[in-house]
Length: 90
Image 1 (cartoon, rainbow, N blue to C red):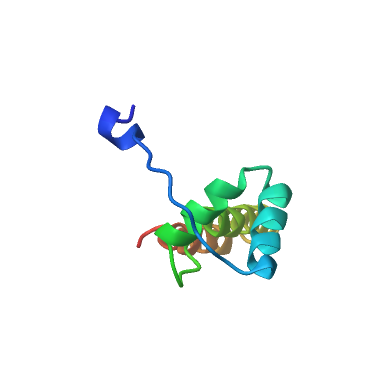
Image 2: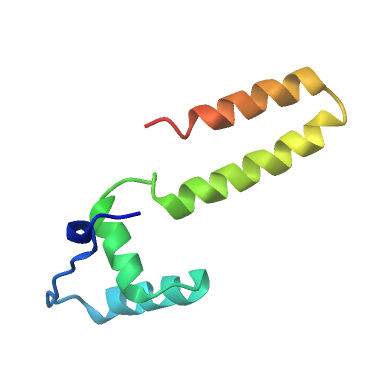
């Protein structure tokens, strides 16, 4: 559970282009989250592809690949799973 000071928020006004605003709105809609969450994520992880949504997509892809590979080579599937898990280490 988060500490009370971690729950406190501050309202700020940010100026951006209409194109960027539309991009944020579209991403939020596609992911089923609020635009504010998209903006916070982008601010917290600037210039990084290691955003939570990307990492979850990578893990989903890895899980599917491992499941398919298990049919042919259990050892290679375990190696692929191990490599996928390494991606979670920053």
